Image (cartoon, rainbow, N blue to C red):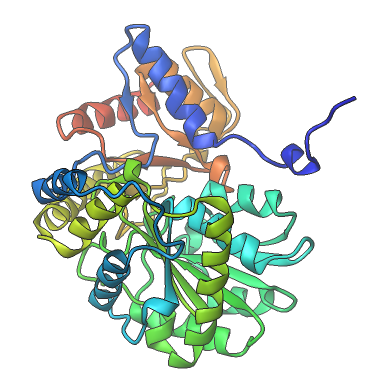
Length: 398
């Protein structure tokens, strides 16, 4: 009998996309649906990006490009890195991929052999687990519940790292929106210095979406001796409203970047020429759109947080970045909504979608079954109505 590769038994469809697809189906059936589910920024880049694309179309070579990325794109990313406080990298330290998800998969292929261990905090972005399982890596999970503000402590990290090959760190966080302060990053960096055999992948794709003046901070600036084993991951998807353009980046040690380039030569060949032009324009051009959107997201965060704080029993640490809120809604477990029993986060999200037309992602998709994720990038006019329905749902529980 013909069979698929064993790894396919470990590969699972995205849990987030499953919720988004259900919401789309109900909307197509005529339901009034407000989606707090999929993590897309829901804005478009500035006109200068489209101007660059139109100009590139008139000059399209139709040829293969560099496996590492076009020089103009590498240079634009290096300048972008400097804007986040990371200097001293050259073209040999960076490479491009088809979005951050592809970048993370390539890094897993480059750094992890079957049976190696990768460690990351919980809650986590769903794809971390999916990628680890596909490459047959072991996972060491570090639970960071709402009671500790969804943040990893130095003691947790120190206890988890022996025997670990890769530590994967997401800041600002998807799904929680939490941002580590300069002192918190420094304390974790001090621990990483004590474990010299661990690669560190920093998923930094929300680094320009930070609120309340807390700022974005990183391990390399905290402890420069970590530069030789820290790999930064970035993308144009969230900052510039360009998730569908699929451009991601790494910056790190030269041998890692070269391994990434080798994998690109066998996987994707290159980022397309027209897409490259768009990415260069986004990174190098006016930054007014992302700056404006960051301010809008902070205001939306405040609206969502006020609603969560007004619901008895809901626990919601204050997120300071990205565009997510991750409330612990376990106070609803064991109750019913108009006869529908709610035993867990999946039941809660299903009942909320059916009864109120509000789509959220169950926290179990991110490793925390006591919570759910709200992505508040829906059209501004929809947000108050969606939050009103959320409050009504809780008020109707019995």
